Image (cartoon, rainbow, N blue to C red):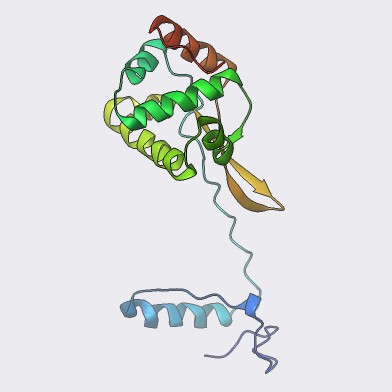
Amino acid sequence: MAPRSGTSSANDTPPSGSDLVHLAVPAEYVDHIARLIEELDQRTKPLAKPARRRRSNTRSAKEWPVEELRRFAQGRSRTHQTVCAILDLLSARPGEALPVGDLAAELGSPVDKVIGALGGLTRIVKAYHDYPTWGLPLQRVPRVESGRPAGVSYQVTAEQARRWRTVRETSGVESAD
């Protein structure tokens, strides 16, 4: 396979580490991939870098209706209890994105328990609520520092906080205001 002119391989210098990537492919595809690379190397004009696909981090920005929140709040599992406590904390600070570590510290729970509950939340909502319409009852906010992922925070909107507090007040449970 002849290297494309202008590449470090064409100049008989080994490519730097940033010029190469490791790619795992099924063994049956290796010949096809080699032919594709060969075709690309024969092009005279370099290809433009493909645009990165943006990944949506929230399923929906819609606030849950009070009745749907009420149904959720009636859950009795440990996951429900933990997520309700998280919603209480977030509803006391609408619009403020709280990192998972801060949520865990304020709840007096291990970070792993909070992460587990938030993972369980997704499964519960998909199984028992209208996830395609409402998404999650809180918003996931990825944190980025120096252009790199730096963890996840969670928040609720002012309207979602108001609705959650209404549910908690009418159910006789005080939220963490």
